[in-house]
Amino acid sequence: MKQPIKNRRYFLHQKSGGKYELLMIAVMEVDLTRACVYQSVDNGSLWIRPENEFFDGRFKELVDG
Image 1 (cartoon, rainbow, N blue to C red):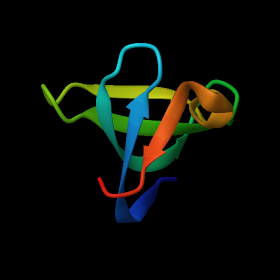
Image 2 (spheres, rainbow, N blue to C red):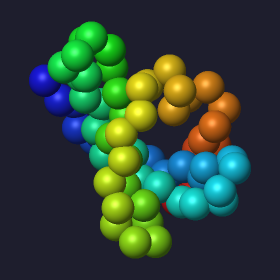
Image 3 (cartoon, one colour):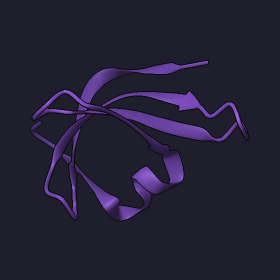
Image 4 (cartoon, helix red, strand yellow):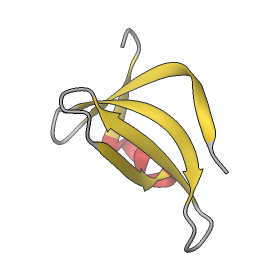
């Protein structure tokens, strides 16, 4: 099950300063926890992180993209 993000949302990683686009919310097969799938704006690399980690302050949403 995936839940694509309807409106583009961009986030700044607080530690690295990297800019990322949140692509979708997915489910981890191993334990069914929700996870964020996001992509680097700089180099296109794809990442996945548990949803609770993504929204715990490690990333700050960029209001104007």
